[in-house]
Amino acid sequence: MSDSAPPSKTRRGRGGRAGRQAKAAAEITPIVPYLTRKIPYYEVLDEDGLALIEKNADTILAEVGIEFRDDEEALQLWRDAGAEVQGQLVKFPRGLCRKLIQDSAPEQFTQHARNPLRNIEIGGKNTVFAPAYGSPFVYDMDKGRRYATIEDFQNFIKLAYMSDSLHHSGGTICEPVDLPVNKRHFDMLYSHIKYSDKPFMGSVTAPERAQDSVDMCKILFGDNYLDPLTGKPKTVLISLINANSPMTFDDTMLGAAKVYARNNQATIITPFILAGAMSPVTVAGTAAQSLAETLAGMAFVQLVNPGAPVVMGSFASSISMQSGAPTFGTPEPALVLYIMAALARRLRVPFRSGGSFCGAKLPDAQAANEAANTLLPTVLGGVNFVLHTAGWQEGGLVMGYEKFVMDTDLAAMMATLLKGVDLSENGQAMDAIAEVGPGNHFLGCAHTKANFKTAFFRSSLADNNSFEQWEADGSLTHEQRANALWKKMLANYQAPPLDPAIDAALLEYMNERKGSFPDSNIA
Image (cartoon, rainbow, N blue to C red; front, side):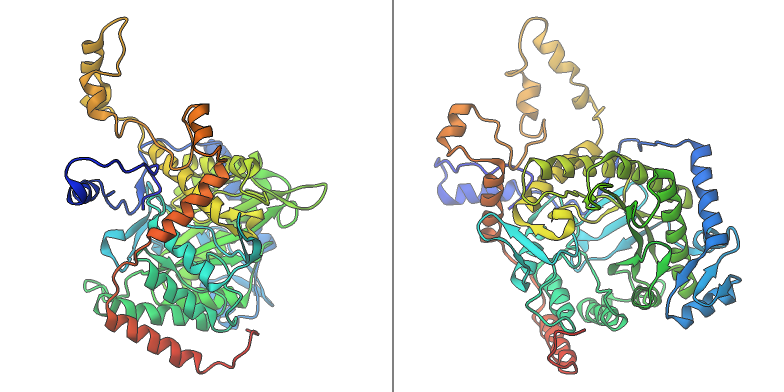
């Protein structure tokens, strides 16, 4: 079921079941693997302002430095590149990181899906929407807040697969805490492969789990894993490498980054910043620190394997200076996002940020307000890879079922905005204006009849009926309609086909690898 059009009542008419099936087949929504913007970027700083942020970032790199903890190989790579290494602290000659990135990092790249129709282009004017990531809890209106399970994980993969406004299956959509920590990455990767044919993310919680992700993709793609033109692996995974802000990378993240880089798989280098705690309280200070951290991380990936695809990431929110709690949907993080997007374009690398953030405990008005106030800057600023598009609730602690479909509806609206203005002959509608003339209405004119089905965005959730009709339909709230929608989507889910031989090979690999681990919940 598509989430971009409202459910409608089936009316019995001529043609019977065959006629209805033919009509349904004709109305199947074509696959749109990603969006390409046709509107300008929203800029908040001029050339001088952006240059100042870049200068400050270079000063941080040269004079303050970045720690690369517990990874001697990483430190040696930096020594060989000409950086000054003091213990685990690396200080970089001005311009070194930028040069390493611009010399080899691709400006745009393809992430291949097992269904080639769903390959995505990351970078340039393209936007890819992916689900939220990393929540230990889930919420729905029926069962409330609870720890996530593998069933929840699989449900969200199915919902993402069925959501036309999402282009990506995501990664750790929620943590399946009913599975052992040291083995759950197998089931998570397999679920992405089994229940969706959209591209997905790899595991980063240990270098060996990153390698398992790569090895499972080798099985999945088989002879199509290597690019016949270059002989290199195709990029089939994109994975999140977080800096430990402020100004630190740990050995877990560095180890995973090395695995992916050496296998030509994409990494998203992202500082995780709550301004006021992990960066200065100011927009300019947070932007400079974020840029410094991402420059160091992306340059490191290029040292490991020049040309490996890398994405500049930014996650910068604020905190309440009264309570210390994270806040979302506020103006300052939006300003940081606009600045970082512009800096990524100047660096000529793809950019990741944004989503549908909220601190709300329920899928209520606060959740909708804060999500919209985050996703709109995401789209206007020009984010290429949007993690956390759908489901984020309670500051990321919760993956919400109702919030998920509320957010996919909002993402569909953003897709319409990115299309811009239709200036074709049909878009100009001069024939309609001439036909109707002064003092009449456009409801019955030929142009309206030809365009009425696709003229305006139609929400999958909003109720625009009269009060009387809304009351007759049960007086449902937005959250209640969302509750009904996700249940209907799961009831209608049909898995994409997967070659039984590949499926069997994946299961064999997983069982063999799992057998080498002790039965323990300790990583």
